[in-house]
Image 1 (spheres, rainbow, N blue to C red):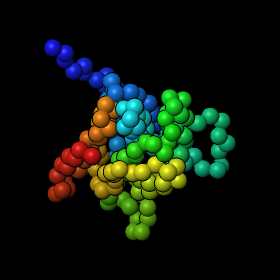
Image 2: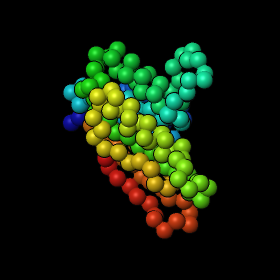
Image 3: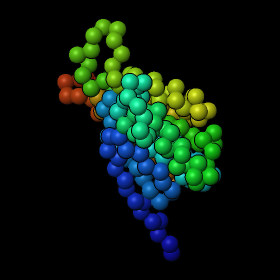
Image 4: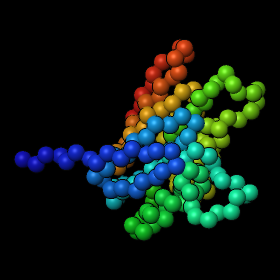
Amino acid sequence: MSRKKKPIDIFLQPGEYFVADAGYQIRTMLGSCVSITLWHPATRQGAMSHFLLPTRGASKPKQTLDARYGDEALKLMLIELQRLGIPSAQCQGKIFGGGNMFPGNLRSGALNVGQRNGEAALTLLREHGIPVMSESLFGIGHRQIVFDVSNGDVWSHQVMPIGTDSGDKGDLL
């Protein structure tokens, strides 16, 4: 009788990304940061990022790609997937995070960092022709994310700050 092998667990810190096969699950915790997951169903390979800001901006020259920035994190993941023979258009995308960690401190009408990150992620995937299969974006509080590369499932658990009446919310996406 064969036992299912337990996946190797990887935890992403802010500014990191990881490309893996079906033997891995990738997890992280997000506040205003955003994670993009990419999954290729035929090969059961995928990637996940944890970025802090949408872009580095034009003011700083790009020496090397830096996964702290959404546009560069996606490029890094796509480069690695292409090395594995996986075209970006065959990937399925999911997006998580972009929470408002300090809801009482936001000026009226101003976009918070989480909102900018989430909108950038949606735009980036659209520009690369990667379909967004699901998303869990914005709101108040942080999220715990677990990406099972073996089947493409992502578990998202949103935790509201103490003192809010929304409670915890967990979803399999």
